[in-house]
Image (tube, rainbow, N blue to C red):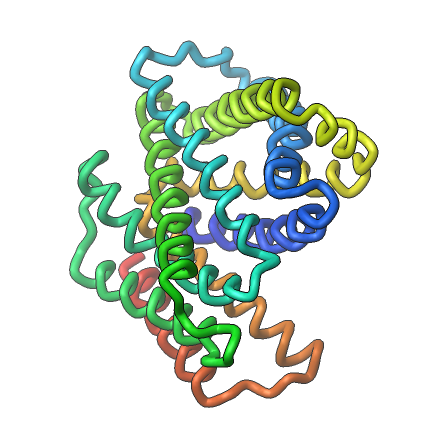
Length: 294
């Protein structure tokens, strides 16, 4: 059950980071807010990697050639997925798109089977379907601004698929290292991925829009926090990926929707509708089915 603990920590950290990135989108734009996570995240990842190597006494890994296609695929699909998600946050269709983004566990299960041979049991498949359906029920409230459109459906499904491909790419990279210490393998992969992402987006902005880099530098205080939380969340996502299938991890991660519902109910005193309650039950049952065998 260690992977479940890692996943819950990562989900909580990601919720905080997403909120910060959403705020930064208004001032930095989609690409700038996307870049913040990587530019300010990789220094923390480097420090964490150094700490892990010193603590464990392990040497810096020498990755095999197969490691690079996996980590590059994970890094670039994550950039695309994050940018796609942020691009719709300020639009009226965001709730709808977000609901479809949360179909990621279904994508991950399919991609994991195709690319990594990660098989799932019938019980896990049922858990994925129930939890994903629950999130969609909670998210789609049926208001005038929240009716599915072709645009919101396509954007949401595309973003969910990209996040799924990213998870599989990173899990493939971790497994390709064949290291006895999964903490070293996960932390090394996090660091390499963030360095690749920070270098690529920095070069892109230097060539295409250097003004954004100056704006990011001016907003360094909130950006620093977003970068730290991004690196922190990634570390625990990758630790979980090193232990179990990405489908298990990303399905359990749907509990972040329950965190949001809890805040809405107890902090903002907003009542839970029957539809939301039904969605919560589906998520809880799905998560229970997922962790029960473990």
